[in-house]
Image (cartoon, rainbow, N blue to C red; front, side, top):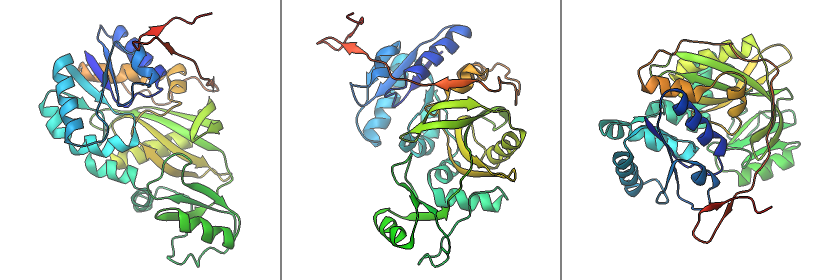
Length: 325
């Protein structure tokens, strides 16, 4: 049971988690893939391969060739840009004997396009922060507001805007901007896992206490039934599969408002693992056609994560070496 994790970059913890999951369920290797040889997680995996840059036919050929060479049973994409690519190529890859842990092309498109996501949520009576989408932004009658790019990720194209003058400056430099109310409320990431048929298995909300570059570095699990039930409803409306990273706010009135869904493992997913929802093992069991019973709400409440960086050293040949002190 070998699995391929693509765009591993610095995701050392995720590689280790899948190694542990494979050990628990028998045996198997993690094959880590990235286009850069300077990606630390490559050297933590059992096998690593350098992929071509870009998402074109050469990348697809590489995936198929690597899958045959190492008898890969599943591909786990970890980068937003890959999700739609793998969704569009799912039938070809699965015909080669590999499962791809991504939703359908239509769901992937909704998750990648924030305007489509907002439209989808409103159509399903799922709450989102109020949208101020007049072409001339004449409906903005109170500040602050929140502006983000339609296809941006993390905090790279997201701004809190305090005035009309600032708004005009921001929308002139953000490609295809979306203007929404600014929500001053606790923000949560929800780690949700679903089967290949879309049945939700686990849901773990975690409060984002400290965030850098769009990633949570300090977080705490929170057993909030309203967030859990609304996340399940959102997942079922999109027919999500595998591990998903969902962002939302919890307003003072109890209303849950969703920001986006990333249908992949997020940077802070290990907090959910540590709290008892070890989704890499759930995925390995599904790939082995084993039963994975729903365990929604079965996790440790109040578990805290403090993330930090580590150093990896390589010799001239690119081989990892022990810490030299």
